[in-house]
Amino acid sequence: MAYKTVERPVLTTAEKLYLPAVMKGLGLTLKYFLKRKKFTRQYPEEPTVVPEGYRGLPSLVKDDEGRVKCVACSMCEWVCPPEAIRVIPGELPGDDPVEKGPKEFELDTLRCIFCGLCEEACPEEAIFLSETFEYCGRSREEMIFGKEKLLEIGGVRAEGVKKWKKEADAGFSRKGPRR
Amino acid sequence: MTFWTDVFWPAIKILIILNAVLILVALLVWAERRISAFIQDRLGPNRVGPAGLLQSFADLLKFIFKEDVTPGHVNKPYFVLAPALAVMPAMIALAVVPFASTLIIADVDIGILFVFAISSLGVYGITIGGWASNNKYSLLGGIRSSAQMISYEICLGLAVIGVFMLSRTLRLQTVVEMQGDGIWLFGNHYGGFAKILDWNVFKQPLGFLIFMIAGFAETNRLPFDLPEAEQELVAGYHTEYSSMKFALFFLGEYAAMFVMSAVAVTLFLGGWTLFGLEELGWFVQLLIFLGKVLALLFFFIWVRWTLPRFRYDQLMRLGWQVFLPLGLLNIVLTGVLKLIFKV
Ligand code: SF4
Ligand code: SF4
Image 1 (cartoon, each protein chain N blue to C red):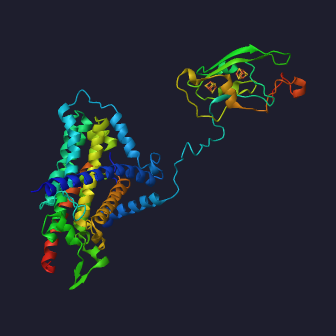
Image 2 (spheres, protein in one colour; image 1 turned 30 degrees about the vertical axis):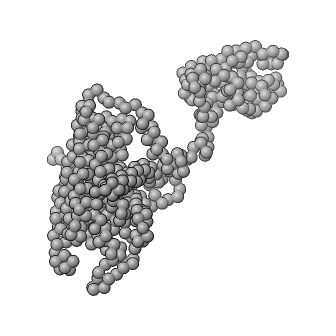
Image 3 (cartoon, chains in turn cyan, orange; image 1 turned 120 degrees about the horizontal axis):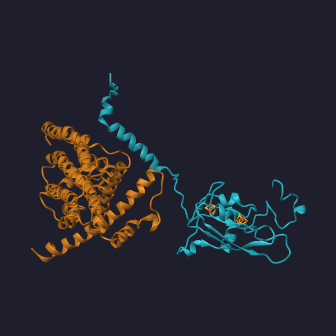
């Protein structure tokens, strides 16, 4: 047999009248209408809590001595899928173990897709995806964030790689596995 | 015929009533959005003005400043005419609604006939709008609307006949007055709180039920909002409309809802009477009337956010095979009871 007979439920008179079901539905919606707890978050007043591991705007960080961690190796620039990053390296003065740093570091926030690859690729733990998601500008140029702005968003991260220390002081070898 | 009684006072009354109703309609849109939000565990518009009360006025400004697009393929004269036709009937029907014992624009003897005659014109706005848009969704919406409104108009008419068999007049003011003078039971007269039992909703429960359901269909509200069924017809008859023309359709729909509630309150819920409070003057009567209308409007909105839409064949079957016979039955029943109780 090519077809199947579907059993239709037999409705009682009350069900056919439809009105009891309507009353029940109205009661339910009234219950929700009177309920005090609502799910709306009053956004600008009530800050949005982002979950742990949230991937917001990429930002540069400084170490606890206030020095820019980035060494302008351009790994992030190379790995970035939409090519949102542009690093212009520059020489650092003095006889520190670190000789190179970013002269300019541009992040085109309109191109960035928040993939987090820059954070993964960075050998110096200098770039992190922050929890910032509120930023704006009136033109495309304004949406390209420079070094200063990115450092401001990133803040300080004391832990992790400390490239200013000599390898012996830092207690790890550059040649071996890092952690 | 004098200037004062025939021109000046009616003009003042028109001004009061029209403005009051327009403002109420604006607040009604806000209420609809707030209530729907609350039912869905949201907050709804609460930013513009206290508790978002001015939201509708902000929307109105937005509507005025939006570009008024007239698509190239429409029938222009009718396209422009339709929104006006959708608003006018509801506004005109307000003329015979008794807001208070003295606050009525035209106290005509044919009261309810006038309301039905005018409000049934509302279907023209929708149908012409749908047809002139030259778009299949709009046309389908317009056709559905005309079929639906014609079917349910009959039920609406049948439902109120019972009321007029009791009141023996079509004049709405008399219908209200008759509901407010207490009830006679076994030879005793009961006033005070028992006066509420004199309302037609208790004498004509079946009539009230049919009237309300037909009223939902007449005003194209859920569960009978087939003319604009979003999932099937984009937006129905006003798909091609934008800017203020769209706003006029919107206004017409809500004004029609207001008129429907006002008529229901007048015919079945005692109009401007409530426990004898109406003796305090016309302003109290107006407040009582508006309070009842708002309660009914809340019911309209509440139902909209509770019930899903009917299928088209279900709608037609309900109209012709259920409510039409029920309406006739109600008339026969009323006649028989009238004979038995000799009222
Ligand atoms: S942020 Fe990291 S990966 Fe990018 S240039 Fe600086 S050190 Fe290299
Ligand atoms: S998060 Fe991805 S897209 Fe954004 S800058 Fe880093 S690598 Fe480029």
